[in-house]
Image 1 (cartoon, rainbow over the protein chains, first blue to last red):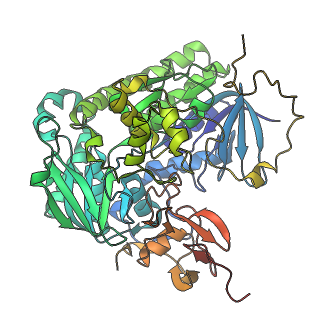
Image 2: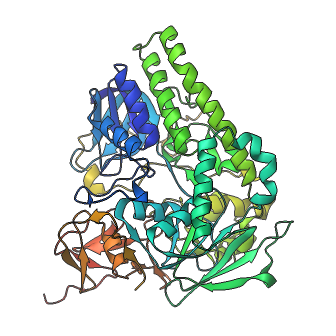
Length: 486
Length: 99
């Protein structure tokens, strides 16, 4: 089996900065990524053949981006693009596919920096072509310089609303409405002290707001999208205010013609690999739900498995970079490349930076705390599971028949059993089960995560030469990994 | 036309063509199939079980809403697959014509 000191899953800001710092301190690093180019979502690159002729607003942050891209060529770093890490089958072992190179890698330490994806918020019309996620729109603009519509509405809850609104204006789309569900203006003054611990990020948000305002669009706070309509594609978006009790005021709804609706309801961490290797999770409602429990130095409950960046706790790019930096030092210390004394000295400034950024983040989370339950947007006809086409009505009829747990709903409807593996519906299912049974969402048991962490082709797996299979012990064959009949 | 390419400050190189549902679509080297289709105003990329259309949603390989058929291979994510000259992209399964 191939061997390395430190295996990193994800070549975004967190993974690349870990690799950079660890390798600079003499650690042998292997970094796996499912994209063709390093950078992740935030530092997404243009295709190699595209040439910039002049600098535009999209080239902001280029210097940091270019420095990060260089990490994959750094001495001591082995880089595996277009690779899917689909399992952690054993302590210190990763299973991956990469075309004909499928195989296993043994690592002394594993860092999961898998990033995040957009939180799904179902409502009538959210499956229409022309309704896209904030992350998706940013990717299309950054990585392809393409905009999927002309007349755009942004709706959501969180800082991505402003970012996306500014992106659309800069891209030359016509921004017609921007709706932020939380009453952030009213809440702002109480969060100012925390928010000022990261003044550069606040300045950036003000810049986005200014771009919007100059385009003649004001931010509607306390409003949300409730429906999208159209003949096969998005043609109209309906917005409605949210009252002080969190109720949607449908009588005050207004419809606007728009062929593009961007949903910016925040992000969920990609925790599949962590759940597969049975790292303990804990519930944080302000950060999107289930997150891995971590030590102060990012180790999960599975010894030797670490989790950093947006893949562990949604913190944004600055926290991801800082956590990656600290992670690199922690790994170098664990592996004996740095003495405890030297590590302590190097860690101090970066730990202080993370504390400052975390204070900012808490302020931001309180500012944007969801003002309503998004379940109020759902009608019986609303699709909950996009892949298997399961509606809210089907879920509730199963619930009324006694299929009350998340697992029971899953196996009776096929919800979460499709190609996206529940990424677009499990979070909603947790809320639906909590609402129906009256138990708090943190006590809703998620269906067990099983390999592969991402869809892989059988054909690719067959490239791998596997060790001889041990005979199956039928007494334990159907138990969760690592458990035994007592 | 709905979607569009941002032209400012960028030279995309030499344009080429592929087909989608039998119609010619223009693309540039390195472009994803989804980007080329969106820029051509084609947003419906697959048909869900109940017959409703779906299109690009997450654009990062997570949701599979943009899965198309490429040269006969099913379930190819248009958001991550690169457009190549002469590709035959289909948004619905259809019997091979002319054979």
